[in-house]
Structure formats: structure tokens, C-alpha cells
Amino acid sequence: MSETCAIYPGSFDPITNGHLDLIQRGSQLFGHLIVAVLTNFDKQPLFTVEERVAMLRQVTEDMRNVTVDTFSGLLVDYAMHKGARVILRGIRAFSDYEYELQMALMNRKLEPQLETVFLMPAESYTYVSSRLVREIFQHRGSVKDLVPPVVEERLQLKVFPKKS
Ligand code: PNS
Image (tube, rainbow, N blue to C red; front, side, top):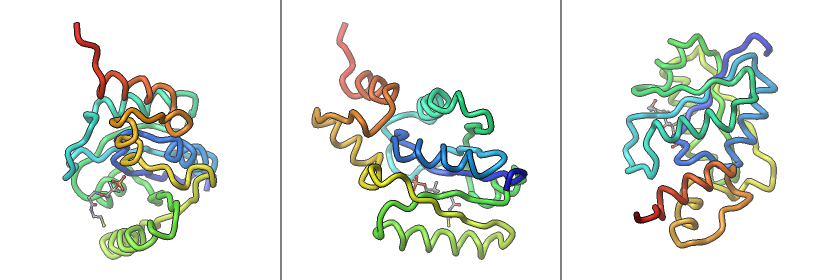
């Protein structure tokens, strides 16, 4: 799979250690991994697309075959435009499976040439999600070990900005 380009799509609001673990695994499996941030997000995000991209770029700067990009519209159209063969997604627990299966099969129906590949993050991250990270931080809980340090700093600035 050293020639294969894979897309790891998501909202990454913000990137967690679980996402990072998956990026590391994906970068070892595929020749090129594009981490793609969805820009037309239904939900009200905490971080802007630019902030999410900046955090992703910072935490992946040492991974030579990983690039960070944004996309809008259908994932399959973006993936085909990039010449990717694979969509990479993480499955943490059984509860992820139904949603992920539905998306994978729908994407296959839309574009049979693309394969969805699922990877499992390290066990220690199976309970980590961006939603829980945001919620815990907003209630002043510790997110240490759940997100990279740069994300913790950005959360601090975003959620509890210093008043001048
Ligand atoms: O991190 P998320 O929010 O679980 O990522 C979901 C994402 C971005 C992968 C999904 O919403 C998506 O692919 N959106 C793009 C629009 C699209 O292609 N929809 C049809 C999916 S079957």
C-alpha cells in the first residue's frame, strides 16, 4: 500500500490523541495520508476551520507523508479529485459501528472505486471523543492525556480567554 493515497476525513473539533493515534497508524500503512477537515459542518464548531487545520498541521509536522487539507461537498468527490483509493476511519467502540457502516456503504454506492478502511486506535483512546473533550474542558475538567498539549493551550485561549 506504499503507493496508495488515503484520506482521513473528519471534523476534528478539536483533534484528540485518538485521532493522532489513527493518523500515525495510517501514515505507516499508506504512501500518502491526507487529513481532510470538513468545512461545511452542520454543527456549530468550537474552533474555526483555520484553527483546526493549524492544530492538525502542528501535531503532524514530523510525519513526512501526512498533509492537512480542507474539503466541502461530498467526500467521495474530494477523494476522487485527490486521486485517493482509500477513506480511512477509526472505530473506537461498537457504538461507532452502525454510523460508520452506513457511511462506508453509502460512499461505496456513490463511488465503488473507493474503499473504506477502518482502524482501531490504541485501547487507551477508545473512550476519547472531541465532543467529550469540549464538554470536560468547558466544565474545567482536565483533558491532559486526551489531547496533544497544543490543543490544551488552544482550548484554554478559546474557552477561557484572558480579559485585558
Ligand atoms: O468527524 P466526523 O464528524 O465523524 O466526520 C464526518 C465526515 C466529515 C467524515 C462526514 O460527515 C462526511 O464525509 N461529510 C462530507 C459530506 C458527505 O460526503 N456526506 C455523505 C457521507 S455518506
